[in-house]
Image (cartoon, rainbow, N blue to C red; front, side):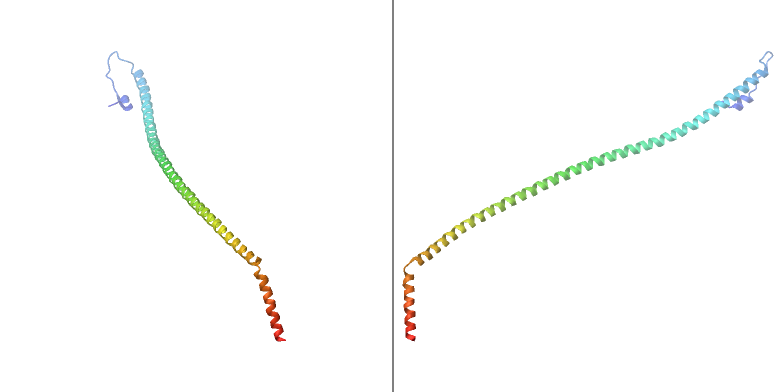
Length: 167
């Protein structure tokens, strides 16, 4: 067990014939007591300061661990979000490519259909033109025949007979 200032103060030495001067020894012991008390007080203060600093260090160590965990979670979350965004973008691109292919195929199909319809209409127009030409030619041929003159003469003759008969 370490000495206390009181142990130093209460220490009594045996007296001898030619011993040390008692007053000098007492003064020295008083000085040792003061220095020892001051050393004990400083030790106590330093011990308290060390405890406070240990407590703060523990607190900051805890904060550091929490921050490290938070950073790891944030990094993992960021990686997960990045991965999900990449997957989603790939899906969107695939869907867009499918839609583009579908639209192109529909457009090609519609273009073919329209092209076939145009060809069909051209054929029908040619047929119509040919029939119309034939009809017009037939009508012109009919107009160009001598039957019309006979018809006009015959009608006039019939009309004259009718008029004469009535009179």
